[in-house]
Image (cartoon, rainbow, N blue to C red; front, top):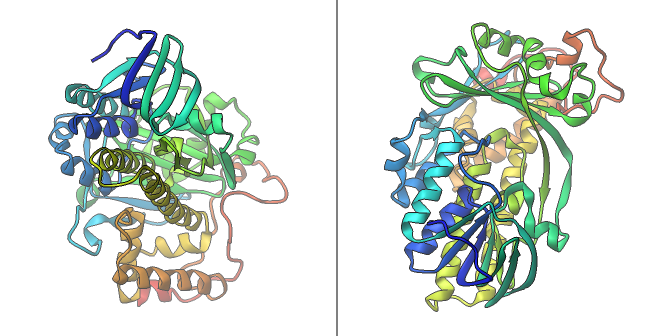
Length: 456
């Protein structure tokens, strides 16, 4: 339900942000009988990227009895992704979730965020959460458990707990002065929706696509029967060398990437693009006193492995359940916040490691081979599919460690075909700025050797 703000509202939990992280927390809390108020400065529907999910998202949707609602919305079943180099000279490598170790969920979905977010917010309202759309937080007069006081444009809210799910606005992190940007992950994204994009078919129907180049990478995500989300994530320093305005850089990047240009031959869509800075950061600690941070409000990690929504949903559920534990007398408040911080910090560390590997060219060369000895490639699928939320089982962990050893060996003795990264700037006749500190690091310089990785 949506109400008009009064001078002060007393509730159990106030949540900043009605996106997936905030809404999933509101659903859990309201279903448990707690009084919840969700504050969001904008209204729905609204455009968001982050449209491709990890299998963990579907697992949570099923656990919370929400998957039937997802199935009722336009979406695409996602059973994996493919990775290729931007020059288009090699077949893309398939990363099929079916090859994952274990008997868990091995598929997920791609979906427009506008309808997905709306569904979650509506479900929270049905459970009894109160929404205040169009209301901005102007400050905090208290953040202690039992005495959280949030000032709004139209009044104030007094609550026992606060959950900050404000996304990259980082309302609480900015207030506390704890947001810290991560060196080496300063990118900018250019994106839009298109019709008529040539998609994957057959065994790869519904797969998302990553196309890698020296300056960054592209995504291609089928959203429904006709619409495809297309984006380019480019190193911020190198993006400044692109000789067109920011709102036309997606088209320029597509034209200078053979693998993507071929996909876009018959595509139609806007001539301009939307732009957002993908500057990774953290706002630790992620919980303390009377508050929790979830999703991008806690930390933003490069979007390459589609981790954002899954981390937000997981964090929202985890925070809500810790609050419920305290309300039921099963935990002390300090134990609840400590457990939440530990979980967010652990998952952030794991996914940050996966992302660092993506930007390591030696790792990329091995991934595009598709297979490896001792089924090590299956462990890679587990990790890239984000099957780490409940820990990494031994049979995955030792194979992943072996993959890391192969990555280091490959720097000096080729285990797969040596691949020179495609450069968008160079293909346009432009020079890479010196020194060459683009996102593709660790490019081997030795000649091609026997493809041992692929042949074993």
